[in-house]
Image 1: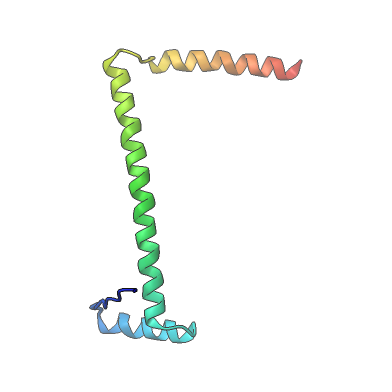
Image 2: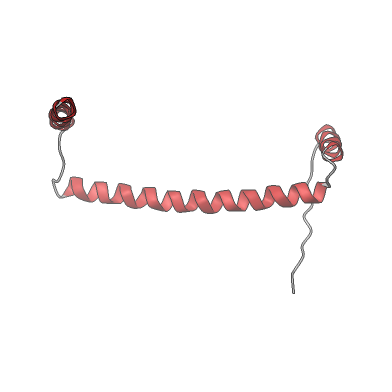
Length: 94
């Protein structure tokens, strides 16, 4: 059995009037629009939460690498990749 709930939203009068006009113009109902907005919000929060967890894990791995001394200085990394770019350019010209 599907459980239903009601949600009361307080809006200022102008916004409520504008919303009512917009849903009338779109030939839909306020309930349909709000239901869709709530579903979209919930889905975005799930995606944001998943991304936040991914990012936190990536940062933790980076911190572990730094603590273990497994890092490359920015200047050294730039030199390494400049050399790789040069080798790739030479290979593509051959």
